[in-house]
Image (cartoon, rainbow, N blue to C red; front, side, top):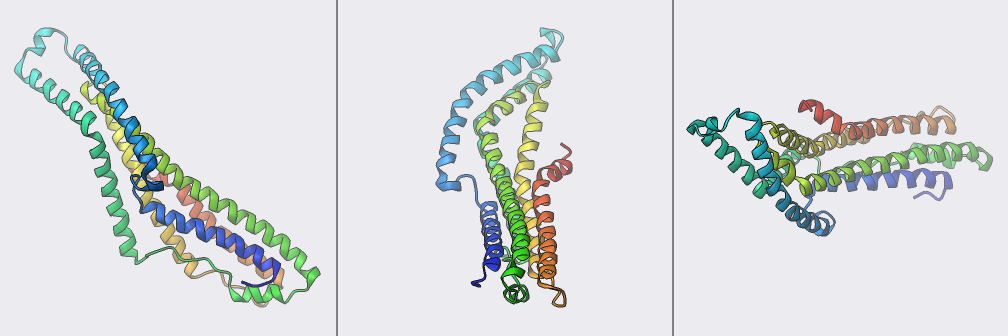
Length: 278
């Protein structure tokens, strides 16, 4: 790294960005069971098991309420076709409450397979590193002390923007893990709503919402791949301009590319929900 304090200021911001981007890449290919050593997952499983007992009681309640709202009299329930339909509905709801976790993991694994396919098809093993061009470093190092003051101000503002965007992006990806954990913990309750026909829409909406959270990973991976392609062809330094102009134009174009990535990551939830009609 250059000994110039202006170069170091900008390079430190890029190092933060690169480290967070690499961390995001690792998080998107990691399962909740292994996240942070699996300690959080074990607690979620304990909560899930405790809620199952409550969900089984709610299952009976939703079943009874569904019968009361669906059938006008007890005589209708005695009909074989209606009785079989009610039995199948109750059995499916019971299976979902008991084995719903396996269903959710299957959905997550399918999406993870999709993410792996996207990564392999793009030929990316990791995200590209954003580095400071040598032309910019040379231009900054050629400036004297007083000429470096405006450069320091430019790189300070640009570095601050880059650092803030990197943390916004990593928080979004961590937020996806939080949503996956919360959906897993409370899943028995929405699954119990399948016991009643009037309440089954809650369970269907829950499954679609959970699938959309899983699909967010695929959208974020696509955004990272597109940004990596941008990063592989960084903004061209205008060697004919003054050092301040060169640095300002370079940082401006770099921040624009980063804003596009951060915006895509932040909108991943909205994009998936629109795709799934939520």
